[in-house]
Image 1: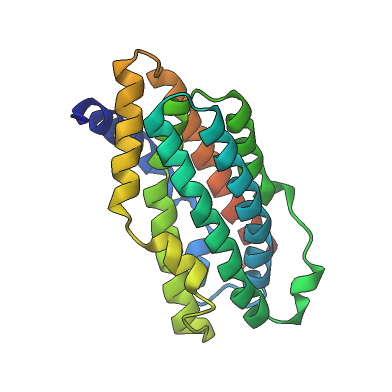
Image 2 (image 1 turned 60 degrees about the horizontal axis):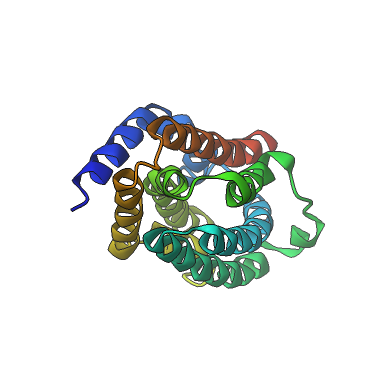
Length: 218
């Protein structure tokens, strides 16, 4: 039974919802107002992020001493590896300038925080903080993929990274709920800590998109 875990996630996501629309880049893409070169920047930044998160999720799984948390983090790691490979097509389609991209601190703060959690975060609270932001990220990716096709002429292969993260994966939610409930049952999950993790994840996520929105205004 994961009723308490579901209630906690609903509570966290409700508190985050007011900032979900603070992403300033996605509306530019969905309206076709962002310059095409923004996709080279997106691909270059995500190439670094997925490699970093792949390692961080492995580290989180290795450090977790609760089986459900290990399953959750261990299941996320292969997805980061797959997504990393999907970016090659977008890099090729985005144009020759992609090789000039340098990492932006505002974009790379997100994976740096995931790496911090891999060393310092309590497992079940980290699961709650990470998963609470998945739905917003999925919506952003779905909107970006739609805008890429409608306004920029990208094909399915170039859009694959965003399609991948836009897809609903019920098994991941089930694993997250099981891990959170295990933390609650063992009196190890601090609700305030889980909410703090979630708020920071949201802030770093928005910083990623808005760093690019400032550099590539519509």
